[in-house]
Amino acid sequence: MTPILETVDLECSFWISTGMFSPKKALAAVNGVSVQLLKGQVLGLVGESGCGKSTLAKMLLGLQKPTKGNILFDGQPFERLSQFERAARVQPIFQDPYSSLNPRKTIFEIITLPLSVHKVGTSRDWLQKAREMMDLCGLASRYLNSYPSQLSGGQRQRVAIARALVMKPEVVICDEPTSALDVSVQSQILNLLMDLKNELGLTYLLISHNLAVVEHLADRVAVMYFGEIVENEDTEQLFNKPNHEYTKKLLNSVLVPDPSRFARSV
Image (tube, rainbow, N blue to C red; front, side, top):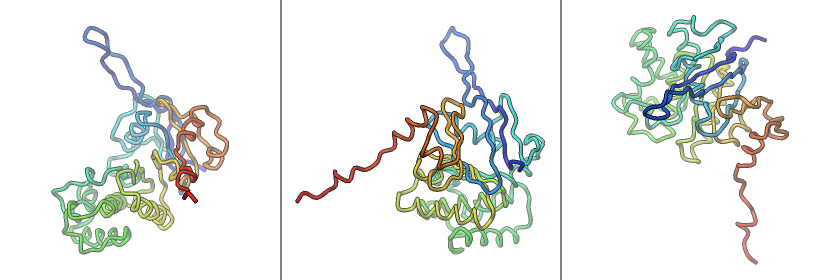
């Protein structure tokens, strides 16, 4: 089976200053990453902050140019696709709905922005499409003319999801989609994402610090460490029998509540 999205020896380096009189040095944020994402799959990408996860996501979205390597979509080089084709196939959901939505735009304008930018359909089509997306994401159409500041965090993230899906993408890159939300809302958004995946046949790259979420949702997990993929296994295999030392430390770092601390004294 041809992967719907694949990276081959992907690299991205940045030149950094090491001192006033010293030459700049190249820092590899992503170093030789090769991963495959199969259609309908949820691939979890985990690792500590600064390991290169978001840089990899930006390259997959066309927001950051790779230094070396290739990105393939259905076996074709990603750079050969037009901006419209990329947007129609891959869309992001960012972690912070408070900053990713323009506070000066109405919910209607936010959801239909991709259609407007790529000149898809007419304004009448946009209204119908916005209502469809809002219904799909569990938002009442009465919020069409509201502004982000008038919505809760969970509602804002539903708007972000609706905006991501309005172009009918095949792949959605979820970059910490619930980390900025209250715990009580996180499960609702995660359940929504999985319902949409099953209903629309979506493929997810799920970037998250929350290993419990990744274990619950992902079919396969890739572990990133200093810009490299050090382990890439089926979810059950990785969580039960990790091979790489860093993966073991990452799993051991998860805090597990001690029931004895909360036991009532008799």
